[in-house]
Image (cartoon, rainbow, N blue to C red):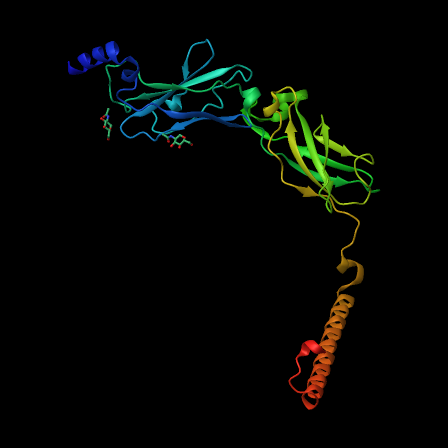
Length: 289
Ligand SMILES: *[C@@H]1O[C@H](CO)[C@@H](O)[C@H](O)[C@H]1NC(C)=O
Ligand SMILES: *[C@@H]1O[C@H](CO)[C@@H](O)[C@H](O)[C@H]1NC(C)=O
């Protein structure tokens, strides 16, 4: 009874406060999505209440994911719920009673997410790649492995980002000579990237970074994560290879001997001069020398 009166008062006077009266509203509701692995995340950890996530394509019926009903977690994996990759989704996080606890309320405090379109918004993770230098050393080929997504096809095989984006997927290579900081870039529509004489000097070691590039997306979502840097082997031998360890050891020994001799000579000279000074004009400051 008390509750009914409270609720009525609430709706009459403090409408906005009332909705979030019992349980705290979810905060910081945000999407975290990499390679179509899409999590909805929020704060804070619940104590004596739970969360339920509802999602929908904008303007359509809301749905629930069975793993995110009255949950004590603060994240919900919606990777396999957002089936239409090009649709615009929105989600709500509702603060509800604990599982098994009944409530006479029909409305619970909720927080809405930003809009999210998997195809446009998921971040593309760092690709792996292999480097191959042609026999005549005039051509370097990078074999990029299209990153796997969290999505599966009808045969239950994991789909790659190439399966999803097809022709819209390109790769951007950033590269430069291992010995310099200068950088060049090259865009490739294929996952097999060839760099020839117009890009690289033969026999020189180059270092490469690769990232996915989807020009059809909004500017700030076009580039994926940078790969690890990898370098091709070059011709230039190191000092050790060139001369061998024996020669270098001898060379170092020679330098040490020269230094020792130099120090010895200096010491002997100084002693002589000091002796000469002492026997001659004693007490004359060095400055006058
Ligand atoms: C929401 O995020 C901000 C910034 O990251 C953080 O300071 C705040 O504590 C978060 N809110 C909750 C309820 O955890
Ligand atoms: C939940 O716990 C907080 C503090 O522990 C308490 O103030 C609040 O009334 C509780 N809410 C419910 C619905 O039990």
